Image 1 (cartoon, rainbow, N blue to C red):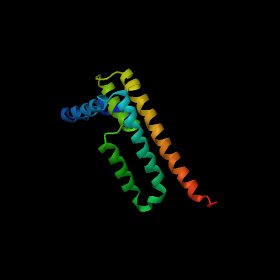
Image 2 (cartoon, rainbow, N blue to C red):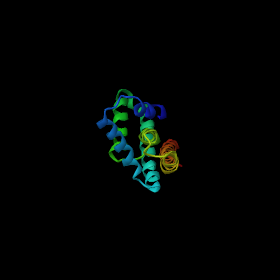
Image 3 (cartoon, rainbow, N blue to C red):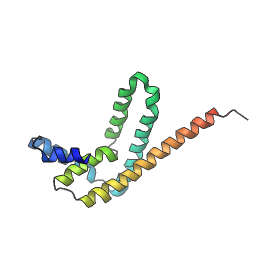
Image 4 (cartoon, helix red, strand yellow):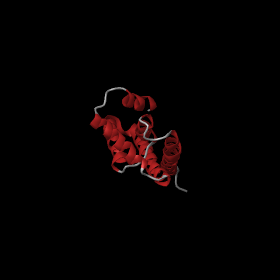
Length: 137
């Protein structure tokens, strides 16, 4: 993530219009409060964990599951540590955000939200699966 963000910022590969689009993407994420970062991270963690859970059953439709589930994260403007890190680190390397903003305003709240959301849905699905496997008393 950091290497990619640095490369697209530092190397002469982006025209000025595309550079501004990348800046705008990062700024759109940073306008969220820490609480919003955390809450949106929970939902993103839930969606991505659900996607991982669906993959074994997807068979030939795996690429469609990935496209649909990641599109839902983007559509809802939910925060995810992987994609969002690239967006915010681009701003850091461009001098428009600080490391402190990346770590404390974005990374820690989003990572915590992703972990909680993913763990919750995994625990819920596991519980439902185990309950359905138990014979009735």
